[in-house]
Length: 99
Image 1 (cartoon, rainbow, N blue to C red):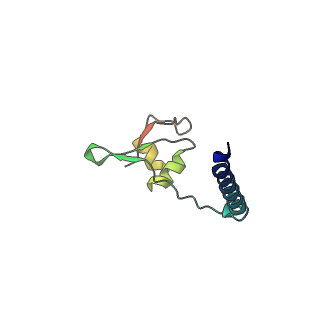
Image 2: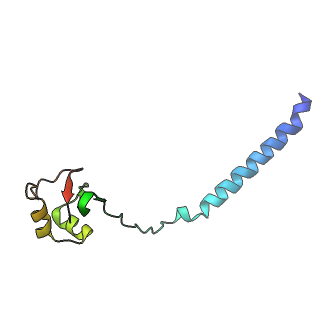
């Protein structure tokens, strides 16, 4: 058993040193203070199809006014391009013509 005493003692010392460094760094890390993050707005999901018709895929929380702002068009133009679509009953994944 004596032959394992030195390696076990050095392993214990290294483990203690690593844990001390780890906990010391955790106390001084920026994660301990609240960080300010900036969210980059996602690009609108606009798909180009034949004859330069642009299609927008409805996402959660979208309305005609939100889609119009994202695609740089007007609500009236969206209603004109999508006559069979009810502005109050949009579904996620629904495809709308935007230009």
